[in-house]
Length: 242
Image (cartoon, rainbow, N blue to C red; front, side, top):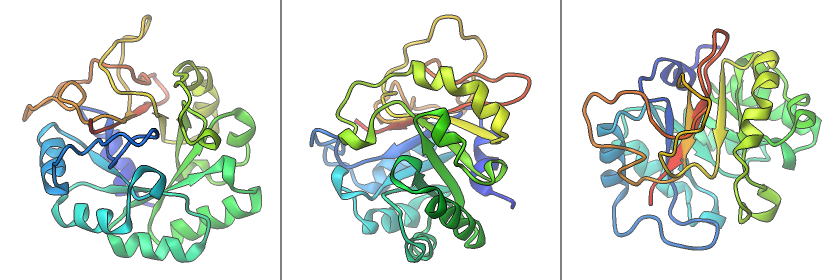
């Protein structure tokens, strides 16, 4: 399946999935009075290849937030929520999503397969989140999916400390599985470089501070923590507003 979401990430000069999330796992406000239009404009000015929109109620999101972001965005959108039913996929497409989060830890293998297949039929890219090789082994059609390593524990509502080493440890397995776009997600909110890394890949950043999304019309590669490009693949990070 052709995927605008995957193509946007693979072609990005700044390989970050920049995220719009109303509040963090502890309830702290991340919006600070800014409108969805304000956040979209700032991220697109910073060179965001795509945006993640958190609609899950744990983080203060709503489906209306995704619809509002879609009104202003010119890049592909990822809906991040607990998607467990096929009717949610049609709704995601209606709201303007190009990709949807599927959390392997919360879905039995049969349900995960059903939802991946249904998402692809809807024209949505499955963004499958894992925390271990055992979960990775259950991901169907990995070549059609973005596979993300969650550096936190969703069962603890992501209130634990991020373990970025998990993403790096799982990178070889992600490459071997065949996903075109490995992602590191959660706990990425500063531009600290990781020692021993020299070539950028893609990431999901969970803070919309200027250091995560610098205001520049022609951004270069991000200087922050990230997965790194190899001869075989590229790795993405995610980042949200603070």
